[in-house]
Image (cartoon, rainbow, N blue to C red):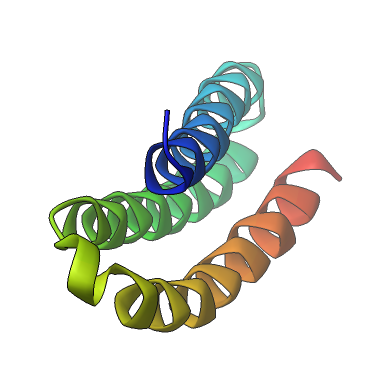
Length: 96
């Protein structure tokens, strides 16, 4: 595997972990009170949107050519950190 493939695999693994975390939050929401369930489901929806945005950005990066990969990767990493921070913050909120 080349560096691009390894990097894409690493990021995909992170996305997969987030998806698994969402499923855990869904299970937690299912056992919450009615008000808690509403709030958690709204938060889960926001989290899912962030993950979907990350997936779309990853797809863009994976389609990049070798000549444009490095430049696109720098842009991707900036956006990825924003998404990652949002996911981590939302996960902390849902875990509380």
